[in-house]
Amino acid sequence: MLISCKKATEFIEKKDIFGLTKKEQFQLDLHVFLCAKCRKYQRLSEELDHTLRHFFMNKSDEELTLSEEKKEKIKDALKK
Amino acid sequence: MDTVDNVSEWVNDYSDELFAWALKRTQNVHLSEDLVQDTFVAAYQSVERYKGESSPKTWLHSILKHKMMDHFRKEKVKEKYENQSAFFQKNESWDKHNNPTLWSTMDVTLLDNPGFNEAFASCLEKLPQKWKTAVVGKYLTDKKADDICKELSITTSNYWQIVHRAKLNLRNCIELNWFQD
Ligand SMILES: [Zn+2]
Image: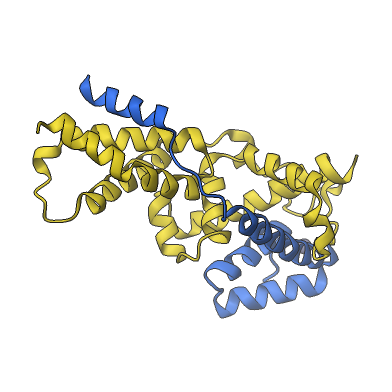
């Protein structure tokens, strides 16, 4: 019934993306209750989520276009 | 007007948005340029099959999507990334050198620090391209997990495993490059 730390941290991710089955949720809750390291990882993982979201949000405004030079290169490639 | 002219016209009209689409997902300028070029070359080679049922834009987009899927299907992720022994011991408990510690990034000042942002960007850069795209898909776009999996040619369980490993690697990299200086 007890799962490993590796499995527990995988469940943390799975939960966020697809959700867990009742059994998996119980296994995760029990593990995190007993394991201080994974409890810490769970919070660290949230911090990482927060950082990643913030990081990409700042980047998403950048408007980038293909250079004219590259466009000409593509047109040249068509002629081959 | 011949085919080269036709497709060249499409390059003028659509290459920017195709490039932006690829760049948004891959966060990789060079790869995005290559994918866009491959798309137009493929479009040129199979232009007889384009019957004008959809707009050229839609047609080009579907080619680009396939090119990207092909790319990720072929991408081999290096052993050192697949292997998680750096984080866990044989019995799958935490490696003692890798015990989780908190960053307190909820404190926004850390994220506003240009040095931290730079370290974070370079750590992201080091991830395998497929992982980076999975991470971008999750945090930048509001796409459904199933759609991200399709674009990356991966299964759903593959997807959360990739995000899991990407986060472990990122955490490790940031701690080495930022917190320990
Ligand atoms: Zn644990």
